[in-house]
Image 1 (cartoon, rainbow, N blue to C red):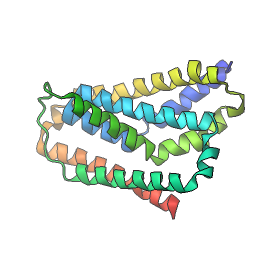
Image 2 (cartoon, rainbow, N blue to C red):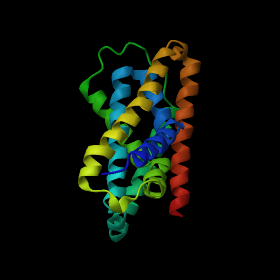
Image 3 (cartoon, helix red, strand yellow):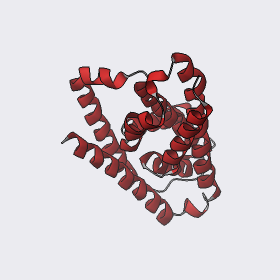
Image 4 (cartoon, one colour):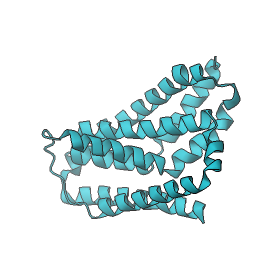
Length: 207
């Protein structure tokens, strides 16, 4: 079993990483303001799923497998870069959203979830945390399948839910303030810059 101190250290490190605004948080706030709470939590679910995938990569040593299929993962990384740049373009050119979101459809929630997943998979901050910083916090060689499923997964979900919910509810609290065209333009362009910055960081890592 993982020591309580190690669990606390992981939760604290993940919480700090999650609180620091990045492409995912910026997009989460923008989505919540433009499409409402349900869309925000759908995107948060996608972000969380992406984190769980990277957690699994780190715990089960799949980073070593990735090295064996380097060409495939290069394609995946460049696809993530292209998607981040596409999202940046969408946010930069996004118009003002009406605040009436009562008729949001299932496919819109699905799109929000997939956007959250894609942003996380292409987020250099997330990659660095799980594949570089996590081994400094936990002894990955001592983690069993039970530890992963019964401890790390629930802790990860709980931390991201708390942090993400705070941002979503905060966005909803000031939603009226952000309802104007100028405020939404600034928010969308901030999200665009965050996406483009993440893509640029990934490009520099590839060169």
